[in-house]
Structure formats: C-alpha cells, structure tokens
Image 1: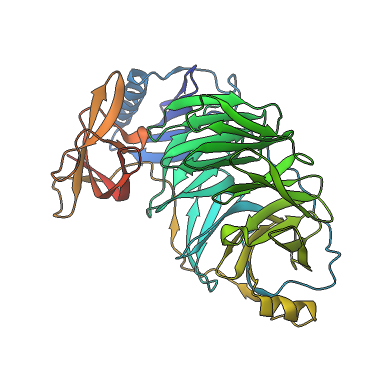
Image 2: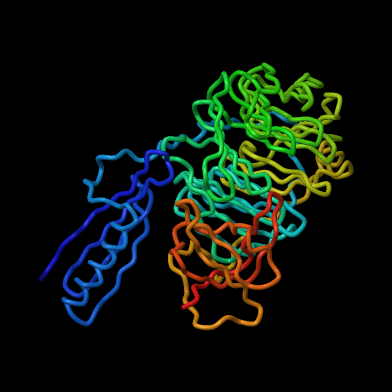
Length: 476
C-alpha cells in the first residue's frame, strides 16, 4: 500500500503565525492534521476512488500551503507556545455560615472564565468547554474549544474566549471562529477587549495590543511580572502585576501612572471611575482611574483570588483561597463573610442581586446576594442548592474549520470580498447599504484573494469596521 506523510510549519518572526499542517496518504485515504505548533491539533480524513486521486488531492493540499509560506519541517524541533496556569489551592472555609446558593452547575474542570449578561451566563473551563446557561440555571448550549479557556470577555454584543492555544474565539454565533491569534512567545495570563481591540497581559509583565484585523499595535513592559489583570476603558489600559497597577494611555504612547499595591495583583475589576485589584496579601484595593490614588482597602482573611462589584461600586465582593466569599460596603466596611459551599471562587460577577462565581472544583455557582437572603444565611437558613445537569441532547458547537459553499445569495445575505491592500488580505462589503471602505473582522484562516463570502449579518463597531453576525458561507 502506498503511504507517505508530509509535515509543514509556518512560524513567522513577528509572531503572526505558529502553525503546522500535516498530510498523510495511505492508499485511497488522505488524512490532514493541523493546528498550533506543539498541540495535537484537529484532524480530517477523506477517501478517494483511486490511489492516484488520493495522491493528487494530497499534492494539491500541500501546494496550497507551500504557496502560503508553509515549509517542510521536522516535528518537535520548534517549541510549543508557553502556557502557564495559575497554581491555586483551596482550603475549607472558616466562615460560620454558607452562602445562599440557588443553583450549581459542575463543568468537570477548574474554571476561570465567566461572563454574565442580561440574557445568559457563560462559563469556560480548563478542558476547553464553554457552557451557556439561563439565569435560572438551565443549560442552553456547549462549545468545545481546542484548548483550555483562560477567560471570557465581552465587547457589546460579542463574547470571546481566550484559550491556552493562543487563539481568541468569537462565540457570538453558533459556529465559533478564531478572531485573534496571539504571538507564540506570549504566555497569556489575562485578556480584555474594547471596541474590537484585544489587550493581552502575560507572565513576564508584558502588555500586548492587537487590533480587530488581528494585527499588532503596540506593547509595553510593566515593572512587575505575572500580569493577571488587564482592564481597558475609553481613556486608558490598567495593567495589574506583581508590583502593583500601571495605567497606560489607550494608544500606548505613555505611562499615565503607577501605584504599588499591598501584594501582587491576582485579579482585577473596573467601574467607570475606579479599578479594583485583588492581591496575594489578602486585600482588594480600589484605585482612582484619574491618578492611581488608593481610595479604599477591603481586608479579607486569606489570599484574594477574585473580586467584583455591584454597579457603581456600591458593594464590593471578593473570593479567597479558603472557599469564602465576602461583601463590603464601598468604604471598606466588611458586611459579611460566607462559605461558598464548593471551592474557592476564581472569577466572579454580580448582576441583579445575584453573585455568580466559578470555582476551583469547576462549578458555576449562583448565589442570592440580596440583603434578605444573606441575613437568613447568617442566621443559618439557606435554600437547598439545585444541582444543574446538562441535557443529553445538548447542542455542541466546535470552531469551524471549513466553510460551506453556496451558489446564490439569499435575500437576507450580505456579500463580502477579500481584497489585497498593501500586502494584506482585507475584507470589504460588496452589498449595498454599507460603507465599502470599512474592513470586516473576518477569520484569517478562510481568507482567499478575490473570494466572496455570504454572511447572515454585519454590525458596525466603534473604530470604523464591521463585525460578522451569523454564519459565513463561501460564494462560488
């Protein structure tokens, strides 16, 4: 039986790509494996009528990749991207009472990613699973991503998952796609997105900024390391690391201020006028965005893993390494401390008198944070937490690796086209009623010169570009 394997890699010096592509032929079967260098990647297998047709198909695939800059390589010679996961421990809570947990959903692995909006809750874990749930705990859908989820971030309508493989996946449609690729030498700790611009905080205390076209904009190196916090607003980027919080101008042109915190920053939150830094010295500190002045300190009993606020900072919440959750008044007065009932909170978010937490045991927990419920819990009366289960037929979505082709445009479809501009492949709108000079945020891996695609919808974003809403199909 005729067998052959061709292994190719594309690793650009500017960090724009760090990928492999392997084609194996065995008789009439052609197997393709591809992904980030150092990862197992994804696989596809096709069967052809004859050996000759299988070999021709393999040669075509290899030729396409070589023309894009891939070259023969020896597997294992290039290192995989560095990946650091926060080392956490979780002791039993010393609180005398347990928080009033309404429901709990166990994801199966430790979880850092959480986002809660008016419609649903999102949780992402270190297995690469992202689940969406209703506020009542009903599990609605599951996304299976190729690598562990670092964090979930939202930007208006869009929701993104930053993963260990260096990709940031857009989960706004049923079929997720890699919207950003982070340079392979960046060991990602945390992410934030603001008006389509991605901000990456890393192990070395670096801050890297990438625009909606997945192109490098600027970077800075803060004075500390282990940058677990990055929060961006209209005016500045707030970068938390082992030596405090540093604020940079939004365009990266200068440092605005630096404030040492009491301990290394392990988590960050922001409101309009303040940023909040949870540290390994058992405090959350509130810093003024205008000048970095410390406005208040919220004292916990052990290392702080996470924090969040009620709107405007009316209440400040914190989760520690001893499976406890705290609530403070804005001035720093501790109002209560309760046990989580299931591990330490690694991330949290407050919405409509409920506190949502993801924990070391991989659970998404919904706590009734109303004054009445907390008072009852402190007196020893708590509801029986409902253990949420996934439905057997739960829809599961994986990143799209191929694009369906269509020969005609549906009445509601919008046509976009790939064009060469200054050596880059850009995507512009062809259909009437849109600004033709604006770029479209579009998956790099499916762009082809001159190709046209049909998308279900486009939405304008601040900064003068469009984002895709719905499915992408190639027009042939």
